Image (cartoon, rainbow, N blue to C red; front, side):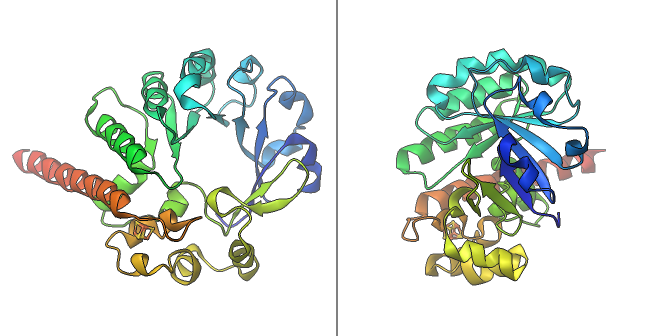
Length: 273
Ligand code: SF4
C-alpha cells in the first residue's frame, strides 16, 4: 500500500479525489445514490456505523466490496448482527468489535454467522485481559471458527512464520497511510493516534512504519526490552505511555505458544505422510 487511505463520510468525498476511501455511514439506503461510478475506483470498504440500520441496500450493490459492521456496545448489540447475514451473499463482511466488558458474546455470534472479526482494543485492564484470553481460547480451540479474529490471527501467523507483523499493520492503524476525516472535515491520524502531533509528523516525513516504530511508536523503555516488540511495535503504549503491559505480554505469550504447538503438530503430520 503506498496511497493514503481516508476514512470519511459521504459529504466529504469530493474533497478527497486522491488515495483510497473507507466510507462510513449510518444510512445504507443513501450510499448507492451518493457514490458515482468513478468513485468505485477509490472505494476499498464501507463501514456501517449503526447496526440498527437496514443494510438491504448494500446486498446486491458493489459485489465483492468489504462491508464492516462497526459495533459500539457489543454486550448489548450482538443480537443485531443477525439482521445483516444477507450481506454475505455478495460481500466479505467483518465486524469491528470494541474490547469492552461482555464483548466476547459479540465475537461468538459474529463467528457463528461466518463474519470475520477485528477486535478494536485500547489499553485493556485486568478484567478485559481475562476476557481477551477467553476469546483467544475460543479462536484457537473452537472447531467451528472458520473466519479470522484479528488481532489474534495476524499475530499467530507472525509467530508461526517467524516473521512478525506489527500490530499497527494488523489492526490497520498504520499512521503512515491512514487518515481519519471527521464529519466537520478535520483530518487526523486514525485510531489510538488520533490527535497526536508526532503522528502528523510521521506522515509529512513519509518514513516507513518500521522506522516510526523505532523512533516514535515504541520508544518507551519497556518496549526496548520487550520480547514481543516485533509483534507489537509499541502499540499498547498508546495513548498512555505508562500503561503496564505485563498482562498484555501474557496474552502475546499464549499466542506464541499456540503458534509453536501448531507448527509442531503440522511437522508431525508431514513426517507421518
Ligand atoms: S507489549 Fe507493551 S512493552 Fe511490549 S512492545 Fe508492546 S507496548 Fe511495548
